[in-house]
Amino acid sequence: MASMEQPSPRLIAYIRAGASYEPCKEQAVAMHAYCAGQGLEIGSTVIDRSGPLGDRPSPRLLETLDLLGEGDGLIAAELRLLASGAANLEELARRLDGLAGYLVAVAEGIDTGTHGGKRSFEVFRRGSRWESSGADALLQDTRRHASQAERRARLEGRREGERLAVERAVREHRAKIRAGQARARANGLAVRRRSLADVPELESRIHALLGQGVSRSEVARILNAEGVPPVRGGRRWWPASVPGLQTLDERRARTAALPP
Image (cartoon, rainbow, N blue to C red; front, top):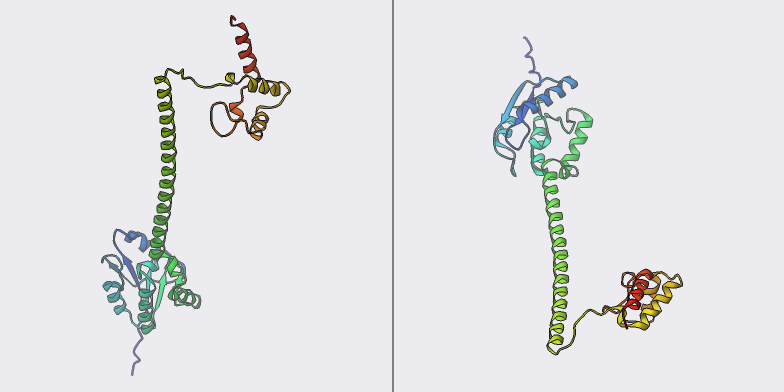
């Protein structure tokens, strides 16, 4: 009695079509190149044109798994084309285990027909790497970028609010000054900006300090330490508010040239 020959294991290529996936041709090229390097041969190809992956495996993928016999294999360009998360991947693995079949994912370098490939696939099944790969990684990146954009918007809004508050305070201060000047003019008083020339003693002291080689920054520090109020208002002297020695000399020369 002649013995019946056992059918040789088949390798079915699974291609997922759609706008959100790599073109079919690129998936096929990647799978054939991998098989050529590993000594594998693709027996047939299934193209899945269903919509995006959901909470359950694609119906077309389930039909493809039904075509697998004992010892047959399924190959895909990427693992994300087969499952959208750890739960989907677990169901896929359970069905393959029931068929004693194997799985090849080209992008991840997984071949459960080998010992190392089985270990790599187990890592994905536990979800420790799946959560940071494929579609889940894209979702996490999107959420992270959205959160960063919200923080930047809040920060920019706070800075804008601070800038507007400062501008409002400056406008209010200038309005008070103009109102005071208007009242002074109404009372017949001359309104002009006060200068250092209005305080001859202070001008003479600053001139003497500058003549001794003291810098304008040091003069401002001395006046602030002694509590001398700035001539033009404000709380403290700044180097820019201290006139230079040459400016004071020119002012004195102009004053001396005026007729008595």
